Length: 91
Image 1 (cartoon, helix red, strand yellow):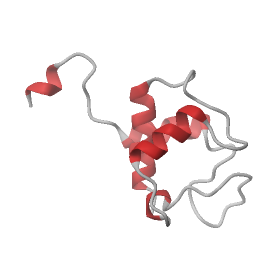
Image 2 (image 1 turned 135 degrees about the vertical axis):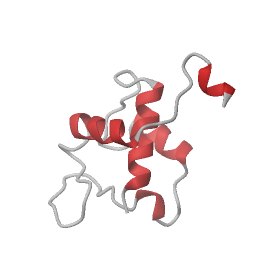
Image 3 (image 1 turned 180 degrees about the vertical axis):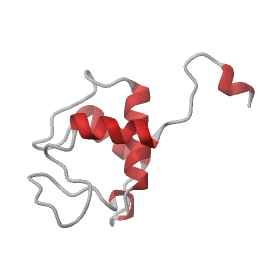
Image 4 (image 1 turned 90 degrees about the vertical axis):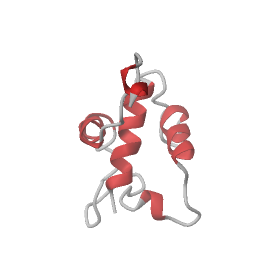
């Protein structure tokens, strides 16, 4: 509980991540099945085989992969954590 009072410490917010997803990711990635998507569908991201880790997700967001550009210069570390928290809610 005390750690929450340290500057910069906060719980990642799936709601903030959803808003970030809408602004930065949704034009290429579709969050839910049944919609056309030029990039991989992200529902069930953490349930794929092999299972990606939170570290993997952070790395892909920050550094990009294949046609996906890196977002490390555009998003802060807490924003990346929010995006990952949102991805964890997609089933």
